Image 1 (cartoon, chains in turn green, orange):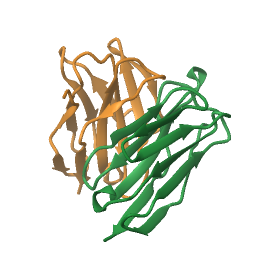
Image 2 (cartoon, one colour):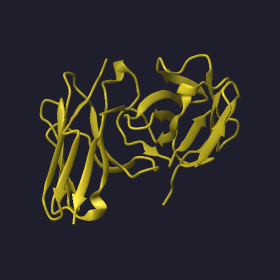
Image 3 (tube, one colour):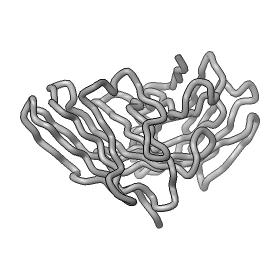
Image 4 (tube, one colour):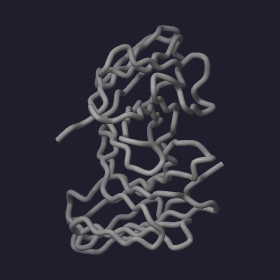
Length: 113
Length: 114
């Protein structure tokens, strides 16, 4: 089946540092989405990517849809305490594999002030 | 801003009891989903629903589970006879179309089976 491998599993960084996390797969995806989840809350969409090679920014966040359609990264610049949370990549596989979103295992981000 | 709303936020139930989790998707969305997240684990797909029928379901979504859109706004997940391992956060999501657009998630219902 379609699986996403997300890394790193967790990060503990100093406030102000940049952060990078990524997702890879052995199979292609049609879209890549990055979500953030705060404790006890649902995933909140951060960035959506629709085309291979696409690079999209949302404030301090930048994400790219890999040219092979098998990977994506998310960068957070100049981290702040409220960036703390779990970041999930998610993707839509090709239609023949169904219409569900597949999620990565998440990256736990902790920020030290 | 439109959002997906879920009720209740927390449900405690005894093993073997039936539970119904409720969701109000975003009003112009056509595709509805239920996902589950066991504590500390990743979000897992349960079922998708379109045009008043299930369009896809995972192996988790066995005969104990059912979904319904009883009226024009609500979307429910029923677990007929809960087991301890059903304890998880259950998220409802909706999207305008499927497969190529983003899904928006509700805040979740924490189900605790005791």
